[in-house]
Length: 170
Image 1 (cartoon, helix red, strand yellow):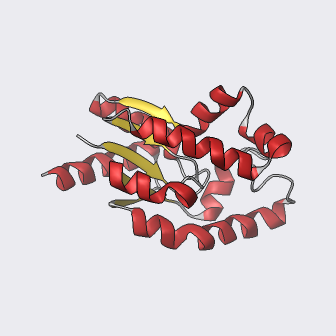
Image 2: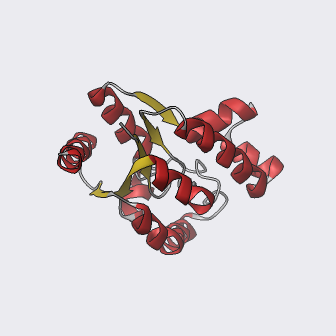
Image 3: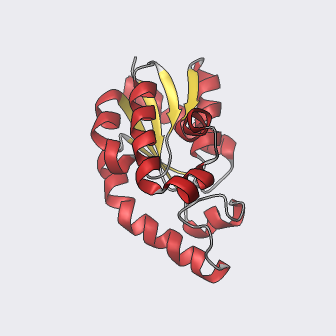
């Protein structure tokens, strides 16, 4: 049994959906961002502000390597985890790309909660998130085994994931 890894933009629902999928499957659940914060003893926005993105990405790579070794687990990965770890993720997990419109994400995203969007005025945040999507879309799509549109309820997304996994594993 392989790991199941969730990828997608910041705020697309990876943490919430993956946690419910793990519970439904009776698997261990991990969130790479939470693991990084625990290891670093500070929040991700603090890591970015005090140590920089390069330091964060190094911690992220170490964390993902450790989490991937804990199969079979369900793992929510940070939005940029695919930038340096795509091959490792693809080789060791069923990859679920959670897709969600940038406007929908911003409607539910707490202000300042995502370092790459922090400090931008509201009118620039949507443009920044859309630019992030354009930068990462092809990478997300190239790694995916399953793509799930997360525009409805959390329960709908979880059901879509579980159905797609059942089909994939049949």
